[in-house]
Length: 501
Image (tube, rainbow, N blue to C red; front, side):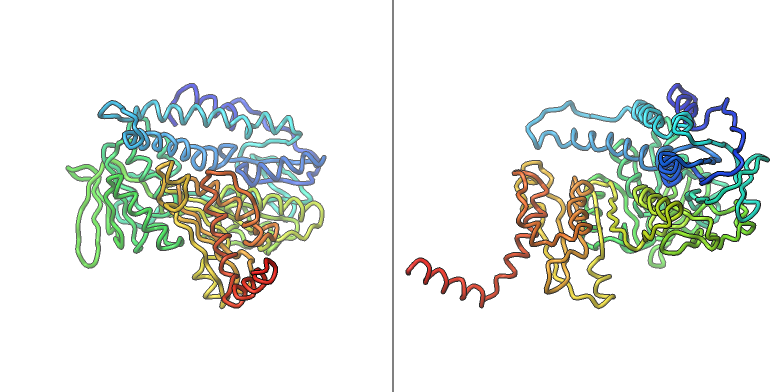
C-alpha cells in the first residue's frame, strides 16, 4: 500500500501495529476465524447476544470487501461515472471545457480516504468494545474443538470458518515473471497506466476495465468466452458490449492468452483467436480470473473438516461442516461469492450454531449486480435455467427506452425482464439492466421473499416519474395477459347489461 495518512489510518483500525492479543479465556462459546464480512457479522451478533467470542484475523479486518473489493472498486466506479457524464454533458445543454480528464492521483487518494473512513466500522477497537476478544495471527486447528493462534490455544463450543477467498492467477506461461495486478493490488496504483490489459470478462474484469477506460487509460479486455458476463442474459451482455465499444475499449472475445512476456513494447500478451495469433501490448496487466477459497494452512484435517482446495469447505444446507461443532460462512464455502451473501450466511450460522436453528442456505433469495454502466442485476432463475428444470414460464419485458424517466434522464439503455411460473403470477426470476439496476432489483427481491406476485406489484402505486416504473409496467403487462378473449367478451356483456347499452 502507498504510505500516506489515509492508509496509516486504515492500518491503525484494521490491524493496529501495537495491538496486543488478549489472554485467551478458558473456553469460548464461539471462535470465528476470519474478520471479513461473514466473520465480522458472526462475531458481532454472538457478542450482542452475550456470548464469549474470539475473532481471529491474519491480515486486515474488513476482509476483501473493505480493503480490496466492493468499497474501493465502487469508489473508482463513481469517479469514472462522473467523468462519463461530464463528457456527455452537451446532450443536456451543459457546456463544459474541452479536454476534460481525471486527476488519477486525486481519485486514488479519495479512494484511500473513504476506505479509511469506513474502516472504523470494522476496526479492532470497535469489536473489542463490543466484547469480542480480537486476535491477530495465523489460526490453525489443533483438534476438533481448539484453535492455535500464535502459540495460544483457544478452546470452543462452536467455531466458524470465515477465511474468505483470494484472487486466482491462471496458469499462463510468463505470468509470474512479467508481473500482474489483481483486485488485491490494483487499488494501490498512484499513477494511471497509459495502456491497461485486463484478462477476464467476469464482474471484476468488466468493472475495472470500464472504470480505467473512463479515467483515461487505453484499455483492452480479453475474455475466452463468446460474451462478457457469460452467466447473464445474452441481450444484457450485448448491451454491455455496446457500452464498452462506445467508451472506446478494445474488446477480444473468444480469445485465449497463450503467454505473457516483457518486450520492448512493455508487457505483451500473445493471443489466440480462431487459430489466428496476435499480440497486444500494455503497461500494466490486471487478472480477473476468479477467486479461490482460503483453506490452506488451517489445520482442517486436525479438526475433521472436509474441504476441497478449489471448492472450499464442504457444508450442508445449514452451513455445518463435517465436524458438527464447526460451521463455515462466506466465500470460503459458498459458490456465490458476494458480500451480501456472506452477511446472509453469517445470519444462518448464528441461528443454527448457537440456537439449534433450522435456517437453510437454499431458502435464501439472493440478488446480485455487476456495477458497470449499464448495471446488470439479477435475482432468481434465468429463463434458460427454468427450461432446464422443465418449469414453464411466461416472461414480461419492458425496455428502458419506453420508460418516461429513463428517457428524461438520458438513460435509455437497458430493460426489465420478469419471469413468472406459467399459469400463476409467482415471480421466479428477474433481470434488470440499466443505470440504476442494482437499486431496482431490490423491489423484485422483496416481492419474491414475501411471496408477492406480479399481479400485486401492478396494484402498487409507484411515484411518477421514476425508472422503477418499468417494474410496475411489467406487472401491467402480466395483468393485461390475463384478459383472454373470453374474459373480454364477458366484460363487454357485463358492461352492456350494467350500463343499459
